[in-house]
Picture 1: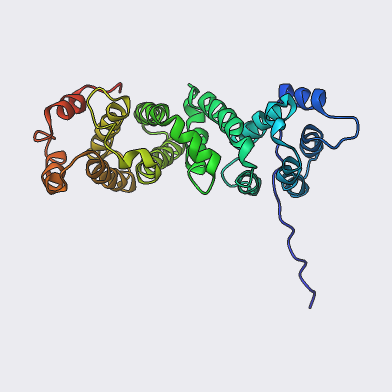
Picture 2: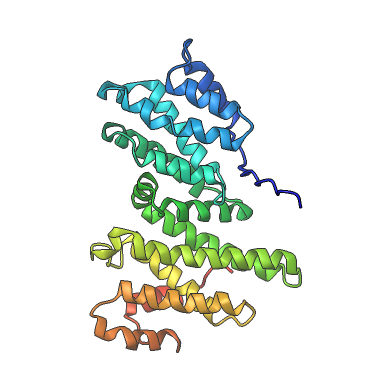
Length: 297
């Protein structure tokens, strides 16, 4: 009886765009010892497992730098490229977690610059208008909230825009699903994207610290308005029998979570939940009006 060989771990290698590659080449030092050189060696590899070794060297290298490194254009550019790398990696790629884990140990004096770079790159992601890229952006929002300090801070910084993106993406996915009626392959993908979008919306409410306060609970607050928009979408999804039951039931949970987060005192929540399932006629006037506004589908 033959002995089975242990299956080697397969990790898709990370890549960067031509512009970022040229940036690394321009900043790499002759000795090959600075951060740009390290990243350049990393991205030129075609084996993801080998790249893990280089990613784990990022923070130890930065720990050797002093506080003046904050103004070093090489480090600033590398932090920007690292943000781009993180957001380009798929959710299932182990390199994404390795990079997040490494950057969680970034020296404190580099955090403001790193946060600025990650926030800028995430905003670029949120600006996408390609419906079939929405899932990648939604996955990135989700991964940023999972044990990744820079990612969570970036989402917090862009909370209004993140909520707006989720609202826009869910509306467009629902419209595309309606247009693709009968095309079961595409509809299956869209249903899955819809489900993920709803779940990520719930994750935000549960994990973003801003929602624990009351400053956003005014009718002119962009966050409040986006929350109302999402609540309206969840309600429509719940009542749409053409959607999968899993999507509908998840929307029901989202409605309860959003109402619990948005309204006080808590004694009124059962009444508001009942209202949500019977036309929302008992909601406060400002919410009722916003929930009654026609959506784009």
